[in-house]
Image 1 (cartoon, rainbow, N blue to C red):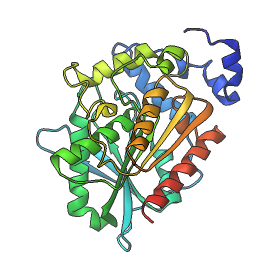
Image 2 (cartoon, rainbow, N blue to C red):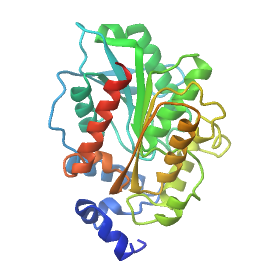
Image 3 (cartoon, helix red, strand yellow):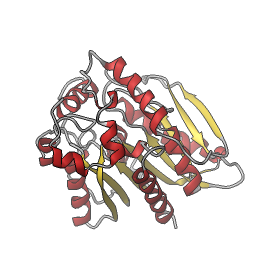
Amino acid sequence: MKPIISSVFQQLHPVVRELLNTKFNADYKIPSEINAFRHMMNDFTRIASFSEVEATSIIELKFVIDDLPDFKIRIYNADRNELKPVLIYFHGGNWIGGSLQTSDSVCQTLAEGSNYIIVSVDYALAPEHHFPIPLYQGIEVIDWIKKQGIYYGIDHNKIIVGGDNAGGNIAAGLVHLLKQKRRFNLAGQLLVCPALHYRFDTPSYNKYEKGFIVSREMMQNSWKAYLGNSDDAFSEFASPLLTGDVSYIPPTLIFTAEYDPLRDEAELYASRLKRQGIDVTFNRFKSVTHNFWLMDGILDIARQAQKESIEFLKKIIE
């Protein structure tokens, strides 16, 4: 592990400083150590994530679709007596890890605080499955909402997509794919520390290339595992930062972490959307690293970020 400069180390939140000395900051080799990484993600959220609230109802459904891997969704706060907006949430985990369970705490908090229905998607993981499968699974979820969502209290005219890390990448790519395939505009997108460009040369990648939860090498290998090959790496569906037309992008929330290699690409995306007149809510959270969003059980800043996201969700459907 590359040593962290003393002055930088002291600027980190005390909780984060402690985490950097644990297995949760190990630089896993992908794909040879993929099972170890997946176990780490499960352990991390079991220790770091804890919601102070519980959703009023939780339902799981399985999708069996021709030409796509089977997958599940978890629905929070289904309510047949009242139509509510919906957030379709894609968990993080570098496309290679994570599950419905690793995003459970966040989804419960968002459901209770926003009065949204949350649909968490257990999309197909790499390297067993490759891009663009998770995006097409997202389209299937949206098609299902438009046809059957009313039976779960979902207002199909108020669909927001979101996610963290790889999930943010999938959500942002889905916005573009939906416009092309369905000519359908979403009501909003929520992106937390998203991966938005298949490049690894921004100042934040150079400054925080190793030792801050995710490394440049790990992200490079995770991207390769997800893409399968690099032919589509620079499409707007894989690298949403490169999209040529942002006019149809809905109101957007973007959160970044100060000490995160992925920080700059997300902030470039936020700046571009703002310049083009898109309604953008943005915050860079100081003293934290990648995955801070999932630390609501141990980190005050994570709880603050989740509260701000709830306010965003409320605002865009007023």
